Length: 324
Image 1 (tube, rainbow, N blue to C red):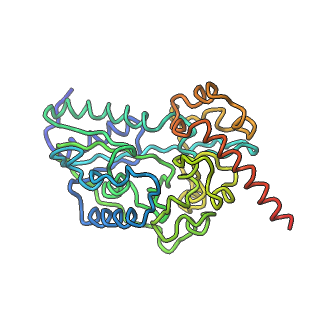
Image 2: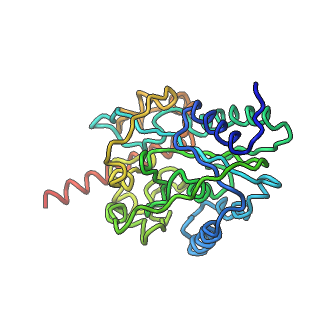
């Protein structure tokens, strides 16, 4: 392998390696970043102080605001997006599951592919140290993705790319090598507030601020209580795992989004046609088999049953309301 000398050529080649791994968009951020990161840290502090993280105590770790505690002497960050939008649709009678979880576990996909990229970089720069981060890492991932120019943080708090919309998961490769940084993304939501209006539980109580205590996605995935809050259960609709309402309404997702043909993103058959009766009747072994290698394994079998029961009551109440 030819060793690349210049910083700009190394950066260009690194992006090409990332592109061959199926990533798009791809960007580079310089550590410690612009003043925007300071503002994002302050926003995080206000979000936490207001209790918007509910029971997600891991969000409080100080490492999230101190990147050099993740990787000493970090100088650059490679940020990548992986499109998970596919043409397939869930069956009309199916319980609803968020799109990001239709295929294989995105955590493993991102980590495995970023590891391949890091090995290439290690050959080019043997003394380079690196750290792979996905959303389980204590990193302000969306803020750094924005800093790297691969998208902006929308009013629903998801990252939006001008060409790919928000149907993407993101990963980062922190490294001690100086790379040529891209320009940070500029927010393009403008005056649009469709995501705020669409949320049935008013979880987005102001632009860019999502209250997890009111979020359907949070409660179907993270809530470990025996019963869901009354206000969530009433508005859950058919959602049993996550929620895509704020993304489905977003104008940036209504344009011609490129469909993914990545084999790891291919939807699992059972996810596309999960019925209420299946969610209630499957035993522990069946659920274990279905959830193997899936990001959905975070939702325990008893939680699937709890969520499914809530959907039935929610739909029944909605139908009665329409009859009146």
